[in-house]
Image (cartoon, rainbow over all chains, first blue to last red; front, side):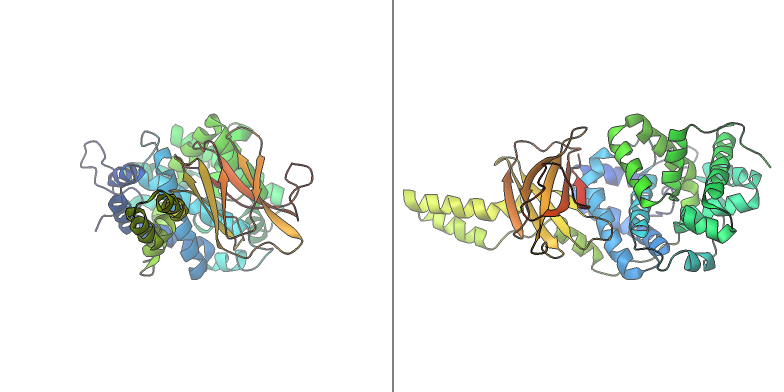
Length: 193
Length: 218
């Protein structure tokens, strides 16, 4: 079983391998068997993302089908010099799931349910190849105040909107937005320091 | 506690918020259009994806139901049509007239096998349209694979939007399948369907809501 989580592959102190990136490159060459291997390696991760964000298994099934359709159609746009394969896949899955979530009519389920789901599961420090990066981001999160760190984590993982967050924290939407933007800015400065 | 020392430029903030996912749909769509049209913005988005990627470690794997990949495959790689063999047999019977008939049969049955170039979907839409492009025949074939036909007094109008250019109407999708002569379909071209009054947009510019869209990969 390929370890697909987050980065995939093992570094061993040399150049980080990126088997997912290899599979995406092969998919771009219309290699259907590589596409299937890619699904086997990343399907559970991407389905997990869709389930977590959409909180609806059947919609998540539709979403993940669309995600893999886009992976096949857009594989040639993947540029491995710009990032890891799994990062690219995760972006496609999150973007599609969040677009679906935002397109839902008014307020069905969402913020309330999301608030019940703990966003603070084991931190990113447990990763394999991305251990260094993960430690850096964990360190940088530790420099943020806890509310802001939680808001960023909750938004990223569960797809909380500014609307959800402002209700959750009881502050006006624009206040929430500038507060969170300052958090993102601090994070960026810390990561680039 | 660290506090940001300066303001993020607006574009960088938008990229961060897009990746984080907090924006309302309209602003997400703006960001997605910028990703397609503006390489600098796209790079900002990629930087934020990389920066925030370690957070994705917290997503737990959920095993998808069996058969899901099969559905993806059947969407992307439809089985050859059974009539194809019939066309082949007729062709083998020779005779100019029969060969002509066979050519028609083959072209009709080959059309759905032109490679899939985009799936047009929209948020909250059951309508799904598969777009295939037969590069040799220079023909775009669109097929409504899910969702209802337009209501009696409306039409689905199909638009072709070359990267960085404005939309051109190329047809009304009334039947389940529609073939349209299209000279070229380079990667980055967007296909979109809007809901218009019966007969299509009266102005030549989309007036109704955008239902589904897809971008040609490549």
